[in-house]
Length: 238
Image 1 (cartoon, one colour):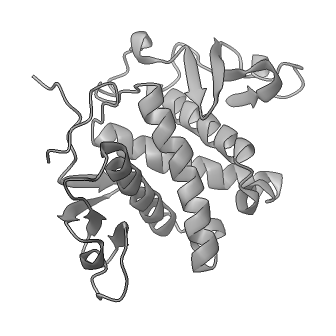
Image 2 (cartoon, one colour):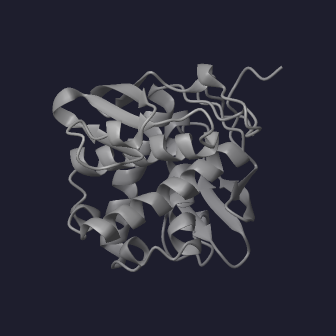
């Protein structure tokens, strides 16, 4: 019986399987031995290298894993609006996204271990979400026109900071994976807004939406493909 969220030895990211290698010294993470790093995504040999020693807090290890996962997603999906930034700015953007996503997964004890079998699994859909320092009610509606509180456009999902509310289109025959994709998309939207990630926030509407949807699709796939359960206590054991 699973009773802890163990640190993974491998992780499937979209259509690729990566081995995760842990090192006791941050200087060993860089495969060229040039600098000390928390983590490193290596596309060519399908590995993710992570600094982890006895003093490493569990949350920091997961932060590094998710950080490198975002790097992999932006690379594999060629999200040039992030992956094409200068190294310093790219690291800043990915780190801010990681802070928000890592906190949201753990704070809301989200779980992704149920099958995508067409069943509703209603009990696993969150009714509330804590995103950074804000608490949101999650409202599910049957018509995309009801997602927009003004009723002017049809949407799959939207968030309203002033109402502390996230609205999600969820019809009975709507693919369950798509519902979760919309939830993750709105979480990313809120993180970008609250943390003022201008590199994404300042993009044009269509381009911004495309980037966020690509990120959400990638992260959603990673969570379900690896059956992660953030409702379990953390473990440093691999």
